Length: 445
Image (cartoon, rainbow, N blue to C red; front, side):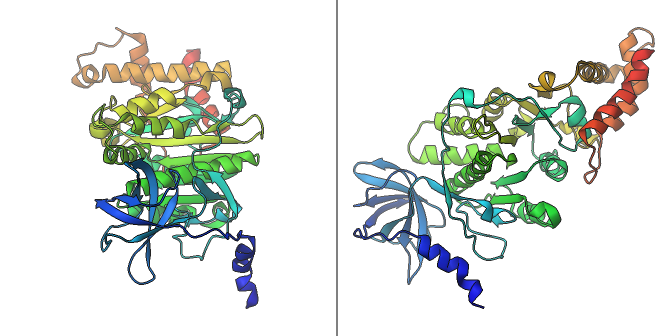
C-alpha cells in the first residue's frame, strides 16, 4: 500500500524549496478571457493561479505587458471571476513538462492527464519555444519513411525527418488519413497533437491507438475546440517539445499535428486581443509566424542522430488552396498532400490528388527506376483527369492521343491502386513492387 505513495514522495523530495517571499498581484480588469493584473511582474509565458472562490484557482498565462500591468489570458472560463482577486505565479516560466512518463498517456495542454489513469510523474522540462540550433545541425533527409499507405509510399515518398502537410477542406478525410499513417507508420515514438478538434474525435483516437503494444510508444496531447486559445497554442508547443525531447535522446519520432490551422486560429485570437492589426484575411503577422516557428522545430538532428518526422494537417477554408494558412504552410513544409473533395465524392479513399501532391525530398531518397514509375503514373492520372469530360461525353476519338488511350485503358487499375481500406497496411517495399507490377508491362509495350 505504501508503494502507491512512492511517486508522490519522490516528487516532493525533488522539488526545490523556495524561501523567498510569496509574491502576488491583483486582477484590475477583465475583458473576455484577457486579464490585466497589477502589482505582479512575471515573464511572458509564466503560468499563474487566480484565486477563485473557496480553495479554488483558475490558471492564467502571461502574454504581454501594457501601461505597467501584466496582460494574462485565462486557460479556462472567466465565470465567477471577481475584481481584486489575487494572482500568484506558479512553476518555471517558459518550461513545459516532458519525459518517458508521458508514454502511453493522454494529456491536456498543461500536461495534466485526461485518461483517468492517475497523475503523470514527469521530472523533465523543455523550453516551450524549443532550443534554437544552427542551420547545419539539421542533417539532410536520406532515408525513406514508411507510412503504411500505398499511394504515399509509392508516389509521394516521405523521408525520415521530413515535414509534410495534408491539405484539404472540411470533411474530405484528413483525420482518416492521419489515422491510417499513425496505424501503419514505422517509428520509435508517436506523438499526436489533437489541437482544436472535436472532443469526440479525441476519445475515438485514444480508443483506437492507445491499446496493445502501440500504447507504450504513443503520447496524445489533446486540446478540443472549446478550450481557450492560449491553451490550444500551449498544447501544440507541448507536443512539439515532447518530440524534441525524445529526438535529443536519439529516437525517431513521428509528430502528428491535427491541425495546424487551428493553431493559427488560436494565435490569431491572441494577437487580435493584444491589439495587433489583422493582415491577410484577418490573420495578424504573428499568427502566420507561429506556424513557421512550430514547423521549423521538426527535422533531423546531427548531434543526437534522432529525428522528428512532422505530419501537419491544414484546413483549407472553403476548399481554397490560396488561404493564407495553406499558402504559408506550403511554402515552409517539405511536401504537401492535397485531398480532393471531388475524388471523395466519387468514393475514392483516401482522396489523394496525386497531380497536386508533392514530396520535395523524394528524388533524393528513391531509385531512378522508382522515380520513372512514379512520373509515369502521375502523367497517366493527369492526362485522364484533364480529358475526363471529353471521355465521359464520348467526344474523344481513340487513337488521337496514345498517352490518353493508355490512361483510359488503365483508369480502373490506377484508381484501385490509389484506394486503400482504413485498417490495411501496405509497407514501402510492397508499395513499390505493386507500382512496378502495374506499370512495367505497360512501359514494355
